[in-house]
Length: 498
Image (cartoon, rainbow, N blue to C red; front, side):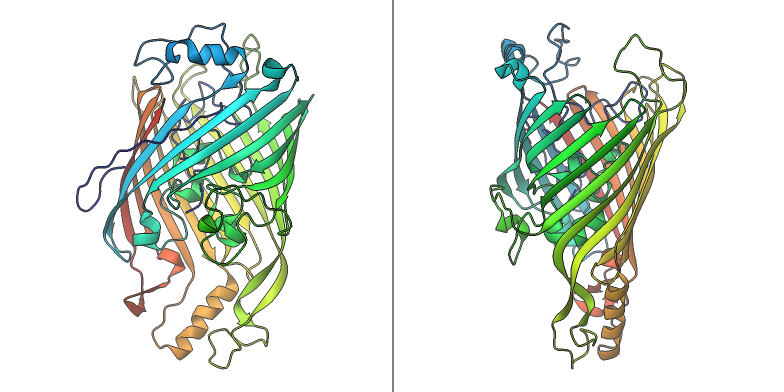
């Protein structure tokens, strides 16, 4: 998720904020949760709107109209239920939609550049069409989704961290998000159109529980790619292909426009409506190999796997654009040197390799909702042209922590962003000319969170985050001889499916 990036209370002033986020959504995530999985049946948006945003998956299909859905207010999956028969009627024609509200209030309790809190809200809306039901074209799926973002960013205003405190933080705007068509051909499917990579690539199932954006779209691509890469709230034109095999192996790859918001300035303002269908800004090539173990069969009559489920991924990305050196000019001098010409060395291309692991490590019983899952992600990039050259995050989640709370989740996670070698050299050189100027090394965030399911359509999430060396040790704007002090952030999020 970035500063996406889909998806409320508590600040130093004790304010409380709740607003709406409508999202015409799709369906279950690419790695759909089973009753034994360690995430709730209805997880709040992460980061992002890390799988943070409704309308985010490509597996969405209309619900099975042959099975009667619960109609009671506190049992049904949407607040509005079948909407007087509208939902099943549209489902007969292959059309699926949902509405989701995500609102949160987060407050900075200590450190940072300012104390106080900020409200952020996200309204996502999307529409999915099964072309076989709608037009008689087998295997086709059409998706369109949009975002209405409101409120202000706590990170930009009070924190100045690299790992954004919330996955839904973004500039206030109403924008198109994704617009694509997918065609399935046996075990292969191809998607073409405007896409947000954080919905399929680098995804960690268990990390989606957490609110910090780095647990959705990780900090390394969010900081190092042009405009933060095609991830919430931006997207890029491209084509993605996926092949799935019976042995649990999936191969995923794509080619996309290399910069979702070309130009100088705030990328989200350069592409404020989300309708800049750009090509010709270099290429972003990404590939991922996935291996899933002990996954439940799609056929409910098949026996449940005896082992605990897990998913393991290896991937890479390459961007063909030019990238400025983080520490040295074209003459080989430090950019901090008064004799420098001020023009950074230019590097052709940029790349990263990454690995993701999700594994359930304990389950109370074969049919018990109570389980423990762990995740880890690590990725690296060259230290000369990237502000962050190593990103690591890991965590643990416990589903159903208390009796009778089957869909609650409690989690603890750690995120680490190492400053690239040339950016560290630049800070060290700056200290030669500005005595007392702080060095830079890495930023670390610890997050503890609890998701409380009020109803299948309503989730509350309490959250605490603590940041060490914000920005990796950047100077305080009010005193350049001191780093921004460590920060404690407290927040509350509410997510409602309409």
